[in-house]
Image 1: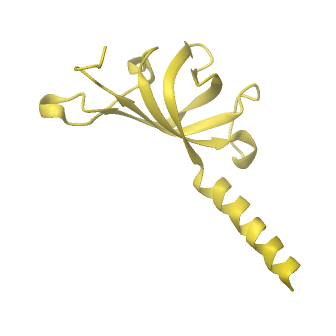
Image 2 (image 1 turned 180 degrees about the horizontal axis):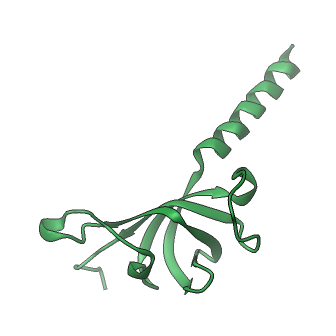
Length: 114
């Protein structure tokens, strides 16, 4: 009985991770405009046409604004909501990348520490 419960718990946990995705936080290392990918913490992430890009504190009076792929910049801190390519069914994914982004939030920091 305990083994069955453990297996059901593991299946639920894995399914939940794939359904909700996960967050990758870090600095953009590289941007490939042709492939529409970014590299964060040395992980290549596919940016899809449906990916929501938000520029955090970039607008008037520090308001958030919607952004485009061209607004992303190397060296910027981002939070990426991503899914493994294997968890996305029927998407026209770039098979050389491991992750697909549903949302990217780029931080606009005017008063950096250094």
